[in-house]
Image (cartoon, rainbow, N blue to C red):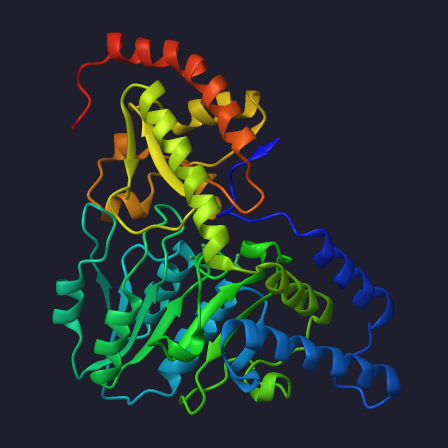
Length: 386
Ligand code: PMP
């Protein structure tokens, strides 16, 4: 199988699986228990916390382990808003945030807050001028993703964070797609809270973290004694240790990013050369190294995915959480892309385990499979919207 869906999830690394098995079989006690095995678990948790904190550039006390980025995002928004000045009634969110995050935004709007979506340009980049114009003294919170999961386009979280915090608002960044793929350092980023998820960087699913800057006013949403009272519930030690092991493997992130970007660029150059009418979104922008979001003419993504499946290639039409519904992507919608084009969108996302041989194989096999379909399309349709 050629796996080109790294933005959906990644294969847990063997050392991650090993570390988790070790915890599950030997260090399975409750880290809050006072007995010996409990204290062993507590020590293992402290070691993992120190390790994760060091790699992410935060203090151990700033790290709240969660069940993944969906929970981290919820915890951040609800926890920060519950502690915000009640006179600040506006919340600003990127219009291309993760679907679950936008659903949360609707719930917040239903609760009486004024939620506004920050627009993106046709390139997929945030409209920074429009965002800046909206940030004012009545804004409680700005939440912006570091990199989009579909286009891979990087968002100006630093610029927006500086503006938001200068206006007295809190800044939350969903860095789920960025952490593990590009260098990240919490100490130097302009955010009060940052979400991440281990399964995006060869860690296990169902574990992640919210980094919460020391001194930030925050009201817990799941009371309990764990995580310094900020997130209750018995810690998932095997998964947390698995996340620490995955961060261990990252090594020189910038170097890996360059290699993955070269593979992605070779794939895109080959497709542009071999498949007529290939269109790639976000290509003019700074992007995640392995992400390519494209369409072949107006060929339906479902049809192309079937052909890819035949070739043993795993890819997707966009975010895994929404691709099952065959709805046009809200990200492309926000970029002003028409529905018929959006339904042709295909996301190929490479990762650190992708190889040149895989790219070459895809470039050798896919174009001949698409050629008759594209030919049929051009002879039967002349009315596609531009
Ligand atoms: N935010 C972004 C940008 C994502 O890509 C994802 C995963 N698709 C999430 C949040 C949710 O992460 P998790 O699966 O850990 O809940």
